[in-house]
Image (cartoon, rainbow, N blue to C red):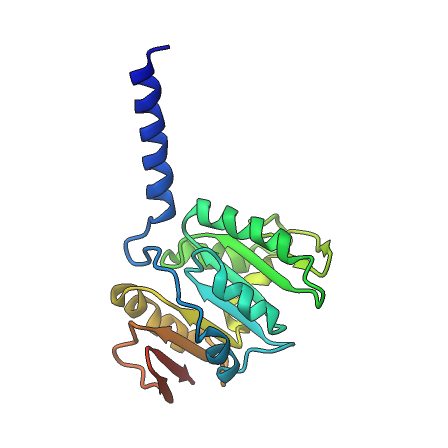
Length: 203
């Protein structure tokens, strides 16, 4: 086979992978720096018995940190490549001595049909990998992704994406649920606390 064709094919595949990894108009992949994350999550009340969501979970690093604090942690991500990578890391984290409960879904958080589909068809199969301790929990619980059950939600999106989510979260979250935004913040919702790039909101 012609060497130029092989090289061209390799470059094309590499470009497709790169585009998938960094894809997203309102939620492009920009990894969160982890030096303050544990402190931020604790301040928001992330702990055992709490339900944590990250909307636009990237490579899963914040979701894993919340899980290590004991929360039932869920990441929703638009890039299949990042979801698969997060699930791969979740399998390794399943060996964590304290056990973790972490899930990753593929979906577009800005598409209303994603939320309707997930909350109205309980019992059907889902795009989720959940691990508790060393043993995987059975897949397929639609009620794993009810945003109304969230205790803490973490968002690191561009300002356009954050703005799109503001009204939905204000209307649907339960009382005392906490939302954390990083760098880009809600234009109208008044935060109850600010800590550097991290702002905290609640009903």
